[in-house]
Structure formats: C-alpha cells, structure tokens
Image 1 (cartoon, one colour):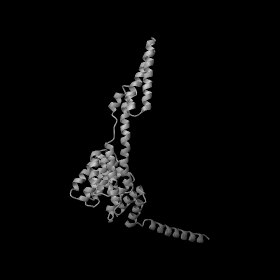
Image 2 (cartoon, one colour):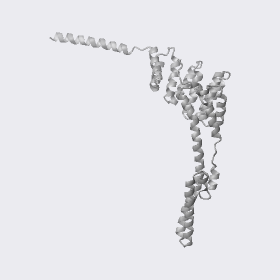
Image 3 (tube, rainbow, N blue to C red):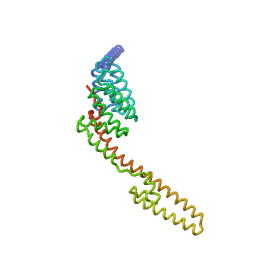
Image 4 (spheres, rainbow, N blue to C red):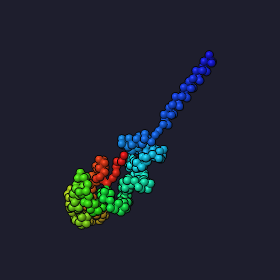
Length: 308
C-alpha cells in the first residue's frame, strides 16, 4: 500500500515537472519580430503608454535587430502621443544624437521642437527649428516642412506677424485642405478688430456711467449714473442739514463707487478686447488641433505616424 502511494507520488511529481517545464519554455520563447509587432499593434490601437514600454523592451532585449531605428523613433512618438512631452523630447533628442544619419533625424528634430512648444516653451521650439532650417539649407522638401512647422509654432507663441508670413509662404506649397487660407483670413479679421481704448473708457467714466456706455454696457452705465447722482445729492443734503458726519460718510462711500466706476471702465475695455481676440485666437488654433487629430502630417510639418 505504501509502495503504491509512493509510486503515485513520484509519478505526479514527474508530471508536474514536465508540465511546468513546458509552460516555462513557452513563456520565455520570445523573438524580435514578435516583440516589435506587438509594440506596433499597441501603438496602432492607441495604447501609447503600453506601446512605449514594449518598444523599450524591444530596444533592450534585441540591440542588434534591424528594427532598432524604428523602435527608438516609435518609442519617442509613443511618449508624445501619450502627452508625456518631457520624456518624448528627450527621446527625440537622443534619437537625433544616436541616429544622425537616419532619414528620420530631421523628423525627430521637428518633433523635439514640438515637444518644447507643448511643454510651454515655444520660444525654445522656434530656436531649434531655426537651427534645423540652417542645416536643411538647399533641401526644398525639408525647408518646406520646417517652414510649415515654424508657422504653427509662431502661431502658438502668439507671434502673429511672423506666423502670417510663414503661412503665406506655404500657400500653394501644401494641400488645399490644410485650411491655411482660412487661417490667413482669420488673421486679417484679428488685425482689423475694433478695439476699445482703456484710456478713453477711463476718461469718459469721469462722467458717471460714461465709460460703461462707451463699452456698450448700458445697464451698468445707468446704474452707475443713478447711484453716483443719488449719493452725491444725499451727501449735499446731509451737509445742508448740518449733519456733517453723515455727509462725510456718504461722500466717502460715493467716492468709492465713483473711483470704482472709473477703474471698472478701464479694466472693462481691456477685458472686452481680450474676449474678442480670444475667440478668434481659439478659432485659429482649432485648425491645428483638427489637423493633428486627422494626422495631416504634411499640413502640420510633423511626423505623427510610424514609418514602417
């Protein structure tokens, strides 16, 4: 009985070892093509964080694989698409350093500049693009791509004159569905905006309600006029009745409302100008967001797809 139990135990142990060994052998079987394909699939499915991890794993385990260049670029692009702009910028910079002879080196430089812009440093992006333009001198395709990217970067940093010049230079050089004509039209509307003068608004507010009326805020103008007149009359009446303390208090309150009306008119003009400009500003930047969602790389001067 004990001998049968021992035999059964040994047989079970043997089967366990054999099945475990088979599972382990299956687990550790990994080849470069499978790993790269898996990372690429994750990227195409929009799983950018996981794709970056898998591209990093490929780079580490298969240093001699012919897909190393694409893997490094794809890893950086995965960071960018996942909005990890600091990591993406460093990855693109490393790519340019390690693969300067690659056909993707210029694209990596453009993407590095875009990462600077998205990280809140558009001026740094402009400097990098300017350096790339010097390096690409004589290459018409590269110059056009860099000019396109420079136009968008200038727009994002608020440098409208240079942005307009760059967009005008690209008209006729890129696809008509890029919307550059509409952007230029919006820029013309932007420049032609009728602005309210803060100084005029403040000066007119010396007459209670005048500043608000200038801004088209007629209800505020009426309230300011009636309130200031009422407080002024109340103060005069209090002084006439010999109630100097009450008259002084009402005068103090009235002076506060009066000065507040002047200040409100001045700042109101600034806010009105900002609100009108902001709507057109968002309209122009909206084109860029739509183009990036559509991955219109030729319109943006960006390489947002992995070149397999």
